[in-house]
Length: 322
Image (cartoon, rainbow, N blue to C red):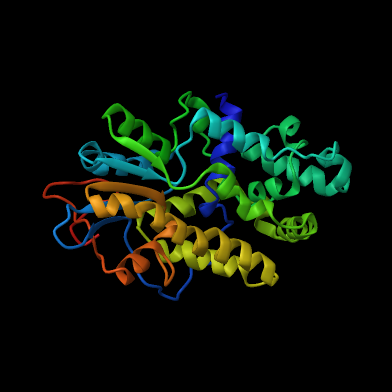
């Protein structure tokens, strides 16, 4: 897979964390609003584990791999949001192409198109590719995490945390399972009228932060993740939706999170019944009334944060109270 295709996949496949930051972190608290690494237990089964990831290559975020590596190496199964096989990668790209013979610059006003091109360049999405995409595929790019400046230096297709965990499992002979397919995940955006996304893009580009310095945005996200503060991730999404019409709430909360959380748990069930499974999904899927952790408890599982081991020190283990 070429680097530019890989970057597009990172932005668009892992849609659960593609939101722009608001002006402040949320104050409200939701269930399981703190913590990234969890043990899942029920009866006499061997425990399973759940990790909330951030789909970036920042070295501080990647340090969590060292903490979970022994658990993955000893697991019988690793569940990821998507097992990005070559077939899935091709599907991810092909499904975004417009089917009406038109290009993006032909259907958008020039000033709007030029703004989109500038933002896409920050995500390493080239204009040549951008011009061919459907509006629903453009919208997540505008809402995406800013590009990691060091990412271009990395040649591996396994650069982001999720891909590295998958590569680790393959190296250790651990079976890797995708909880959903590319087509299933992207149906969250695909099955809506084009006008919804055109209007949403116009609103997004009117906001001052639309072209905010991307390094600043990335740093705010990383700090949330290092603090294991899933509440702030969730509240930021809610804040971002306050002035949006109901159909956008339905896309981002009902379809992108709530329904997918339920599908992910159903996909995890076989591994949970057998025990000794490991699941890694975007951190935004963990908290909330309809988050994965709360729904596991409702199904009779016990969940508890995995404590740092004695002497373990990293971005995620500065002390035992983290």
